[in-house]
Length: 408
Image (cartoon, rainbow, N blue to C red; front, side):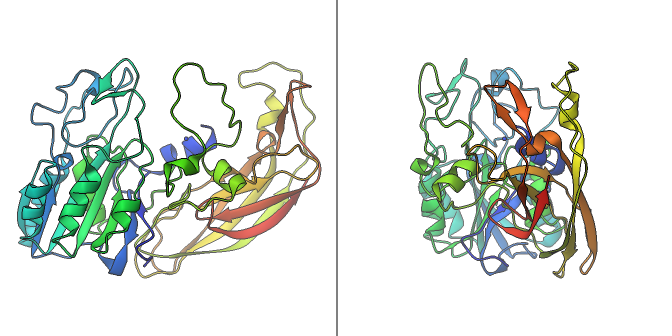
C-alpha cells in the first residue's frame, strides 16, 4: 500500500468536472489519501473513538438552516440557491455504530470540536477517527464570516488543532475530511500517529453508509481528486479578491498551473488510492480524418468540433489481491505548431468495472476535434494544429504510465 504521503479520496469545468461527476459515486468511492501500514480497511477493531461534530447530523435537524447556510453537524452539502432538502441524512457516527454492533466494537464519542474532549475520548480507544470539514456556498449567505467563498484553505472549527490533540494520545488516528474543495493538510500529515486520511468530499444523504463501505473494505475506493491539493496556499498562484476579476491566470488553473510552474503538489489532480493495484499496458492510437470546419450553426458551436478524430485505448489489469475499479485518464499535449499553452490537458477518462484480482479490461477514449484544437482569438474560431500530439494515459495528472504519439 502507499505510504503516509499518499491519500484515500472520493470524488472542475469541461472534462475535468465531468470525469468525477460521472465516474465517482458520491459515497462508496471516496478515497484514502494516506494509508500507512494498511491501517484501512478496519477489521473488527476492539474499540473506536469517533470524534468531531462533523460525525453527527446537525442536532437541530439536517434541514434546519435555510439553503444549508450553516456548518453545524456533518457536511454533506454546501450552501446556496442550488441546494435541496435532505429526505434523510445518514451521519457517519450512526453508520459506524451499526457496523460496530455487528463486530462487537466498543464505541466512545466526542461529538464537539473541543480538543480536550476529543483527546479524552481518543485516549480510551485503540483507533480514533476524527471528522473535520470545510464549507462554502453562494455569497448571499455568510457562514462563520465566510461570505460564499472560503476565507482560507484551512479546516474549519480549528480542525488542525482537533486532529493534533487526538493524535497526541492515540497512535492509530484516522482523519475523515468532508470538504467543498482543497484543504491544506500539511499540519495533519506531519503528525506521526495519523495513519490514514480519507477524503470524503461532499457525500450527500448516504454519507455514513458510503463511508462505512470504504472504512471496512466492503467497497474498494476508486475516487479521483477533481482538484489539486497543494502543500501551501501560495502554490496555487492565486488569492481571494473582491470586486471584478480579470482572470489573469488564463488557462493555467489547477494542475495546468502546477505543471507550468513545476510545483510538486501534495496530492495531484486525478489522484486516488485503492485497496488493490493496477497496471497499464497496450496503448493503441488510431487516428481518423480531421473534418474541415463547418459554417453550420448549432448548439455548442461548429458541429465538426464533436467529430471523433482519433480512438485511443489501453488495457488496465488488477495486479493486486482485492477486487477494485480504476479510472484511467487521457492527457494530450498540442504540437509545437500551436501557440504556447498548458503542458497537457485532460481529454478523456473511463472507469473500469470492478475487476477481480488478475482480471483486465480495455478502456477506449474517443478524441473529438475540439479536444485537439485551440481557440484563435484573431480568427474567432477553433483551429486544429498539424503535427505530433503527445498522448499520455495514467492514474492521475502526475502518474502517467503510458506514452504515445498522435499525428494529425
